[in-house]
Length: 325
Image (tube, rainbow, N blue to C red; front, side, top):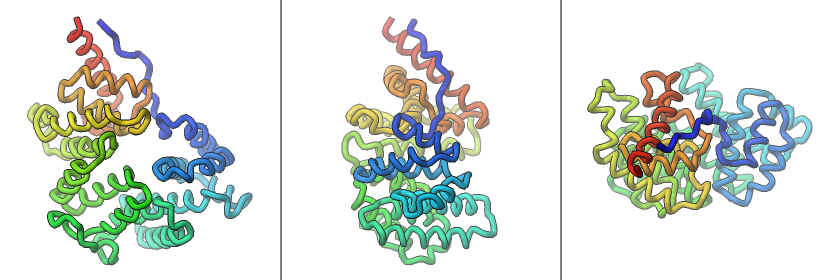
């Protein structure tokens, strides 16, 4: 029997990005030089730039490292975008917690986004951040949140913001996830219609094909009961077909094009739908890397997420070994 790797999962926000990992670690220690150097070589790749600024901002959000950096190197390349990212994260966190200062934080973050968009018209990140902030405009009072969709099946929403991102970053992984989260709050049917629309139009190999896997986890996570019928949803359509479609798209992708989070969702969906051979392929590519989601979302409690991951990995390898015996 072929045994599953015995290494413990590695949870690091940089995932497969070896250049990003030391910069994140340095930021968390209050050091920014490696971040400055990394951002200088990332600006010409919109997808890489978007992902790296998101991860770096999350690493910087709980410290004063950016303020320290600005005092020593005011106007440093990349610093403005990271500060904007942190402002957006603080506003979103306040919104989730229902804190009274959310309106002030939202307005400051939104103003920073518009300033950054004007300063660098080619940068997709300010538009991604504006899209992220749309969830805080619960009354849709801002005109950019009431654009008509080109798809008559979809309601008016922040479509113009999404279009601005995609003009600059055609894949727009974070933007698509932000838009899904927006519609998930506004309208479950619109969220499902949006995901169906973008996945059916995604190019082969695109990580957007993983988006329905997040939908499956959300539906399971919010189910009133987690009985055997609900646990078996991944063996039924549309979950099963979405899993197969995502797997085929991943097989057509470039190495490293899918994030650890996307591959974790794919590995889970393949395991949960008893496609063990395919699950092993994904686990092998993941190696030691893991994300807490979806495992903490499908476990009986978040603390048991790693135990579910380890069980899934062991069963997947055992399933392949049995099939090959």
